[in-house]
Image (cartoon, rainbow, N blue to C red; front, side, top):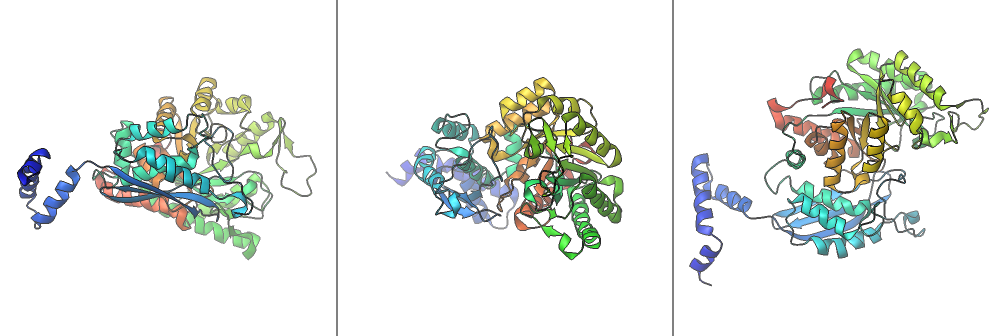
Amino acid sequence: MSVQEYLDKHVLSRKIEDAVNAAVRAKTPDPVLFISNHMRKAVPSVITKVKARQILDSRGIPTVEVDLYTNKGMFRASAPSGASSGMYEKLELRDGDKGMYLGNSVQRAVKNINEKISEALIGMDPILQSQIDQAMLDLDKTEKKSGLVTDFGYYVLFSFLSGIKILPQVPLYKHIADLSGRTSMILPVPVFCLISGGKHAGNTLAIQDITILPVGARRFEEAMQMGSETYHHLKAVITEKCGAHGCNVGEDVILVLCICSFREGLDLVKEAISRTGYNEKIKIGIDVSATDFCIGTKYDLDYKSPNKSGQNFKSGEDMIELYKELCTDYPVVSIEDPFDKEDWEHVKDFSGLGICQVVGGDLLTSNPKRIEKAIQESACNALLLKVNQIGTVTEAIEVVKLAKDEHWGVVVSHRCGETEDSFIADLSVGLSTGQIKAGAPCRGERLAKYNQLLRIEEELGDQAVYAGDDWRMS
């Protein structure tokens, strides 16, 4: 093929002319570099290789990291993992060999990605998200993705999205907004985890987390300042009241205390907020995770106590009265999983009171069928979205739309076992969820998400909008 034939075949003369004209209009000081970059953007993106490996998450437990190679560069993403997997969410594929990481290694998942998923995706354009999603679905048609793909395999999709930051010269959050059809993007209110109980802590506190929401901030940057200052004041309050050994950092990056009741924890957080001077600008949330201490139809608030008397069993009606009291006595505006994941009757009754946001985490597991049931029964009014529970990016967008159409709140959430991947930060902005729960304002794998949101706010400049008081209806 001659040079002229090659130019004609690939329409290069026209593309070069367009690049030169663009350089002239831009008055660039380096026309060669400008033209080179312009031409590079004009070339379609193609996946050339997908490489997975086993790494360790924040708990020292194996997880999957994926490198996406295209004709425009290499991009990387890694998968988080929860402390437990609900029966309605996508499954993890662990090897089960007790001689390797106590049965937690993920070499089978890595092999599936490198040998089968990779083969199916090479040659595709990573920007065409719906086609990528469909290719993944075609590989595993089981409802819970219990076959080839599993939630580790689905994190390949998020490595594609990470690469999109550079591929079309569009920020990842903007690309996600385009995929979902949104024209506006909103910085979420951070839901900072401060006090840990439940299965995550060595104390006797039944509930899993006590959180704060700086809804009164004007910008995300100010919300981060409020969260950090409250966190450090809380450590001082705990040290004063419980001694130097009463304050530790837990597996989920939250403070673990020697406390046993809801009110003890809430009093400590309320005191810390008071010391910051922010007062009404900061609200409180509770992640009850009631499934962990539901026995039959009763709730055992002493389930972790070695000397429990058996007198602290509560009925569903008792728990509703308890929550009503807490919302009256403290600035509690959000309660996650206040009842067992199958206790639809009481979560419906409590949600119907309209006294706070009622978040479905274990109740919904980001599962479309569970969400539809909750909508039909008015069982809650907010969705906890964990991206590796749901499956594909397209499905995640669909469940968020489903929730927003019902005027629900949406909380994008981290997992107990996290990595330095910051994808959920861009997701929360791109889908304008209004809330993001990524742990306490400390430790790298949690701050990776919050720091990315600081960068996004800076990049948006005057167009940056913080959810603030509209945190539930963004």
